[in-house]
Image (tube, rainbow over all chains, first blue to last red; front, side, top):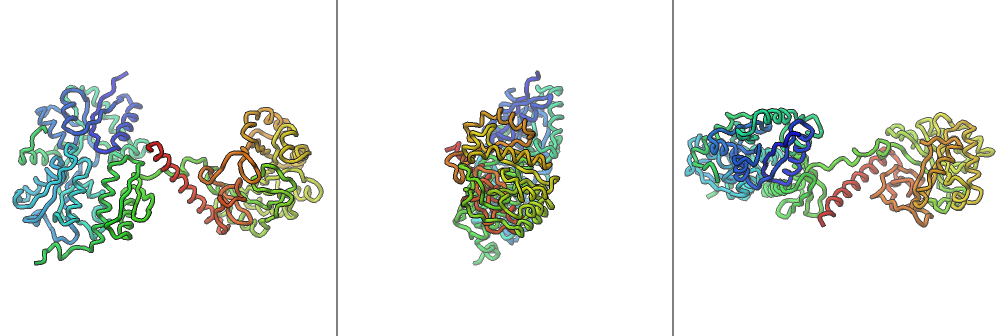
Length: 270
Length: 348
């Protein structure tokens, strides 16, 4: 029997266990069984991938870019969620605050999420820079909670929204997933509104080292992409993981994060 | 100086309510699907916050479980539909029981509704039974089951039964001991194609049966089965057995085979600790899948407790669909509460 592929994932929520048990059970019925190992942070997961303890790592966009940096581009991205290809950062403020663009943040208080969150910290600063705003032009507050998990828990973004509600900040930069979680401003129109949404970029992806043979990875990816939203057993796993389809990765979607990391001098490894 | 942001601030209740949602999102993220979180509404306008929490739950696929004072409990994800795992025949309202009367020619020592010759009749009456049959058919009920007391004590039983069989397949429970004279003539006027008789026999020999139901009752019941067969009726036999006799079923089934009762029509019921029974299994609304049951006094959870206040549901029999819906609603609530309790206790 084929040895199972060992996949690493970060335990950012208790649901990570049923998600990966569900994935393991799904793959047990295929020609490419898998097992999983959970990590407390992406740094240790990428270390394990590079050292050969893992066959695959379920990486955030930051973990992918850092793996690329540490392997001189030798690693491979195998597959992402459909939702990973259209990720965006949303700038939000109290309804009626009068923000109309990133430029209107000049001289105002912007709260960011954890420093290792691509969507809520690293990319927002990049988007400000693209809009002609340096860090000194905007009064930035950073909420570093759950550092190591690359913003997966969403906690720092919720804290950022609380800061806006409490008038400790004028605006917050959050991921589209958190914006959707609070109802996109439609649940309570008087509370938040978005005033700028970033271009789409790529988020998570399965990452492999060159040592994983194509003959092993391709059938596994084929089985992954065969998971079917219409199949109730697959669907329960996909709902928890936040996707409707597994898709090939979109590598050009990481360009903005690569640029942001270069601009901000973020190291390849913490 | 007034700052621009102060000029346009929304009313304070709304952000506070949104703060409750932020607490909720964070809490939900910390528990696995199926777990619950509680949030307090202390700093928020209660009504605004509750509205927002309900809207958030609806849009996010989570379930608002309970609101007690200022404490709101939310389930991560949606609880499974308690009705989904049931056999379709077990769904509330798939069949409806009606107690035609409570008086009886016997005084069985385990009767779950305390029927006897001295029991008050409390007849359902022709008019109400007609309306029950009409509304049951309209509500999608698949079968009516008439029981008592002993229905054959009623002088209008043929008309009662025919009002049911005109609408739905019907089963009539009887002790089978009264098929003589005018009562036999009433039986003969019933619709053989739509009516099944269910006759109570508790044992293969008279001993056990007669010890509960009275001397000579076994022989009369077995004779009643023969008469019903001769008259062309399908006959089911239902035995009520205490737990310690449940392992001695083979001789009983063999006996029923010999008197022409097909295996699918041989029903074994456990003795319930209800009515005048001094022992038997305990059955509560928490532990019992409901079977909509109607008596002259109203609607009950299950026929085994149609004389007990703890399983009384409503005095309003009509609209029957509403009564079925109410029992379904309570059943779902009981099941969900039990699931939450089951989830909670292992952690204690």
